[in-house]
Length: 197
Length: 197
Image (cartoon, chains in turn brown, cyan):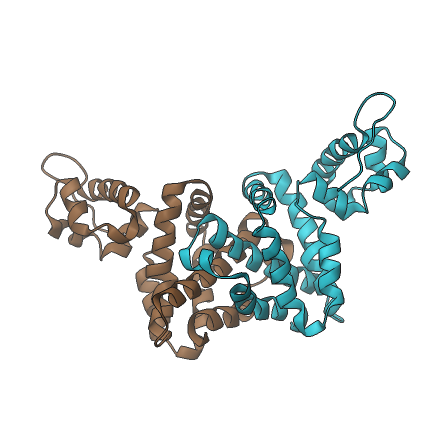
């Protein structure tokens, strides 16, 4: 649960920061947006942004309505055994996607990335830097930035495509598969893209 | 190039058949639609449907505006060496997707599958029966129908997700990757889902 605060002026500070961040991310994309610029636009002290949000990924997650801050989840996957990264990543995503509150939010994000250029750009940078890219950077050794971005893009594609079949197109056998069935099927794929190369 | 014919009444027979097939597929889905029912709805002799279209997959491909009849392409992949099925499938898809006339059509199909329930249902049955499912059935040995559908769904998800990253979200490293780079990365994944299990 995130704290909520009231400013003397009567507004909801946390909501104001999210609103300002939405505009900053939309204008400049994910990479170039700074928490300082968000604070300036919201008319609050930068320390307040840090008070409400645990870094830029958490703020971005709030802006797009993600059901969880992915930083913490990705951190857990990275800190686990190297040989289990693929399976742990698939399990983490499926647990979010399969949850009653996570699914409609993630569907909305997938749809807007399909249809809106602004959402597309933010999502592209966020997924390749903070989510899949973060794992690839951790394990890829001396791979080039392009190579890491390719690995991140392949992993993002595999997870998004699986979600498309399970939650949108609804292929019956993919809908009915248990989380652990899918972990066994997709884990080695993610492991190869992100860890073993 | 498909032949085009004029009926005495002045209509374009081939276009009439496509129109009738669109309605039949939309009402009954892909699986239950017969060429005989399409002919009846179009008010033409069934032999005319067979004259213009080389079977139900070809008719369906024309209805959805696919850039090629997938039956022939899948047939080529299946008749190649077993150990190359994954790579050949990825190469076949990328050649279509990367072509100037193929890309806008396939994008439109992907978009409508995301947003329209009718398109979604037709696409689900077509992909799991005629495209990926046909390959899985060919190589899966004694796998159950559910297992074959799961493999087909996983393969469809991998290809659709890659397309999402290369043509929609446009992750730069995935856009810039050559066809053969992607064949090397994705080939083993498709091989495992559809052939090796």
